[in-house]
Amino acid sequence: VALRVLNVLSTSFPPQQVFPVVIAHVLQYMQNSDPMFRKGAMLSLAITIEGSVDYIRPQIGDIVTLICAGLSDSDTAVRRAACMALGCIAVDELDEEVARYHEKLMPMIFSMTSDSNPTIVKYATNALDCILESMGDASLAYLPQLMERLVALLESGPTEVKPIALSAIGSAAHSSGEAFAPYFNEVVARIKHAMALTGDDDTLALRGVATDTISTVAEAAGRDAFRPHLDECTQLAMQGMEIDSATLRESAFCYVGVMSRVFEGEFAKYLSYIAPQILQTLRMDESSAFGYDSGEDPEMEDDDDMPLGFNTAISDEKEVAADAVGQLFASTTTAFLPYVEEITAELIKLLDHFSDTARKAATVALFTFVRTFSKIASPDPWMPGVPLVSITSIVPFPAAGASLPCFSPMAEWPAP
Image 1 (spheres, rainbow, N blue to C red):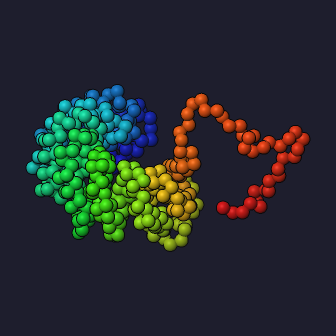
Image 2: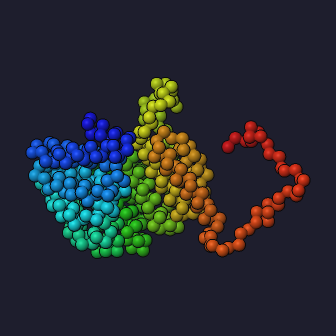
Image 3: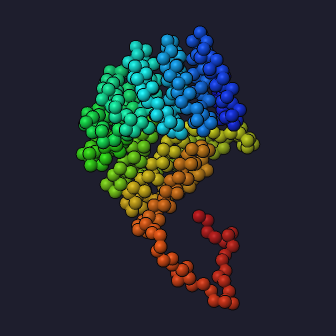
């Protein structure tokens, strides 16, 4: 409960009113001989970072030093909490800043991925994944040791660690670029095996991560290197959509978005299957997710101030589908035109969705549609100095004294 309160305070109030108080207690608790106090310090730091990103940016070195103290703690619970704090701080807004301290962090995290405690290995691998993506060329020094360890975890690590290790392999490919080539064939073979798995929820979770990761590896390797694997991997991703798993469908949509960006027009041959799948997701009924069949919940009708900051599995799937379809149209352009009208209608409906992230995805997708239409109509980029075309040369302006055209009232316009 205390951590929830801290999270609400940190995201609702200005950071200068919350973070100084929290960090003062964190420093105090880290000096306590009771490991539960030190664990609480790391968790409190992790939970308050979200609302204080810009505020703590100048202090990132001190924060990393504090987390390193937690990573080297003698108590397992404290080390686990420190891994969580590192994963929270290595977010998109602070990833580059944290990556600069790789010389301090990487040896400690590497050591923890070999810990005898599976929970420590899990959180350490997750922290490693968070840092890797933004390390760029700095990751090259660690790549041989890194790949050896991650492949070992993928082969024989604890069940809950395998998806995280696979995701970290994708991050390593992303950060190392062309230097990943020596590991490409072995990694792709292992990922394709994971993309074909069936079984319980843990197995399907691994398959979903594999579907995500293969697109990251493809983007890092480039279209020429990955082209021999495209048909097989796309078929496996599409087969995952037929399994009753929202996770696999989301992963397949992520795969579609990234792969269409990598292969552009070459990816158009899969549209006849992918576009109907996207339409099916965008049209899914969510009323059952709230336990009622009608469009409104009687208990919610009069509560206009009720916060609707929640998602369902269906809304998450719609969000990912909307993200993918924008990139799909931008990449395949004219080949996608037969599907534009129906999908645009569904995206417009999604603008009124209760989930703010789904609304955002629909808005971005629609703007991408507009930009893509503009690109199709005017393939040549605008160049400074090109003579402007007068609007009167296209639409004659009425002569002086002439009456302007009269438009019908809005009420007489046909409904859209």
